[in-house]
Amino acid sequence: MNLWIKAPLAGMPVGAEGGIVVAHGRIAELVPDGGRPSLAVDEVFEAGGHVVLPGLINTHHHFYQTLTRAFPGAVDRKLFDWLIELYPVWAKITPRQFRVACRLAMVELLLSGCTTAADHHYLFPPGLEDAIDIQMEEAERLGLRVVLCRGSMDLSVEEGGLPPKHVTQSLDVILADGERLAKRWHQSGPGAMRQLALAPCSPFSVTGDLMRESAKQAEVLDLRLHTHLAETEDENAFCTETFGLRPLDYLENLGWVNDRVWFAHGIHFNKDEMRRMGRAGCCVAHCPSSNMILGSGICPVGELEAAGVGVGLGVDGSASNDASNMAQEVRQALFVARAGRGIEAATHLDPIRWATEGSARCLGRDDLGRIEIGKEADLAFFRLDEPRFSGAGNPLAALVTCGAHQADRVMVAGKWRVLNGAIPGLDLAELVAAHQDAARALRESLTG
Image 1 (tube, rainbow, N blue to C red):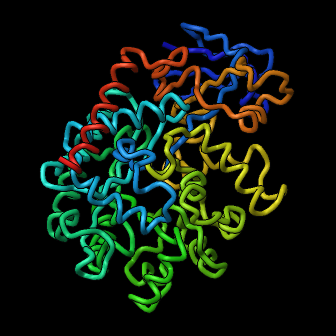
Image 2: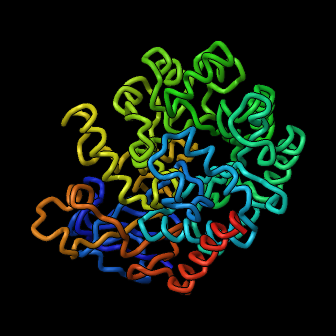
């Protein structure tokens, strides 16, 4: 069916104020103000009460961490101490708990207007070897577009890293699973719903051999590469003391500075490093809420973009953000940019661009992130009839500054996945109850 999304309140490109025609899962026509589609339409959705955006794209997350939000013992700690507290907890997550944790994270994202999500999962304790398969199944069930990052750790505390030995894996096991997952799940080309990336966790949790071999494997399998980098000054100090190099220099020697790569956080790069990343085509997933909660610093988004580095948005893990809400992350991105570098650092439109077009660039997806003919029909619809928006004059600015937090409708590949603020067929109360039980059981397992 051809659907005309008619005359939205705001959000359309100039010359397309009359709306969008969706056909075969893609944007087929942009309608001028006051005009009608030239294509035959089977259905009309009156969008006069909605601000319509390209679907928000989350470039960095850890779905499983929804089970350890505001976790006692980890609250009010900086990154390294926070990780040391939580590694042993996460190692006890069962497959059943993991599945409900990931389902809840994806539901949160969809309800906030997110249509594509990248998740970085790097813990595979005994019994959870099929973690990425579970995530793929849950994404299919919900209709969320995903890029799932097969994370990995092979540098334990006994060998000079940060994680305990029992949450690491061997190089051979990691590479074999990456190949298996790519063959089973990865889709390429426009419209792909399920993609795989390779994602050694961080310089302080993986060996140089793993970084190097993952880069080679990504080239052979034509996959993207992802890792945490330049998140904290502690990480910079670790790399300097351990490898005699700053993080980017270390990764460049291992084949990780190229246009397959997007880094999570990217707070502590210097100007020369930014220029090198820009020339190479690297991107950064900016995670403002997580950076603020952990006190890691402020990502220099303007300087990165000026150097040619692509910037997208990510919510990061629900244990360092305590939310999985992309609409809220857009607001945070605007505020922290201005708090760090003044009013000129960003307009109200910039964080929307980072969360859509910029995020699509991070994931290597030129079929997403814009409302244009031929792009995927991934769209987020927001109403402005809550008290928080009352009196607002500029609908797009209001969406950001007044604090949109939930989408009224969400479309992925031309299919409605959220209607009237709910996911059809999902019992949200039942999911939350199951998730609460899983989180409680995980906490109790630590003392049992």
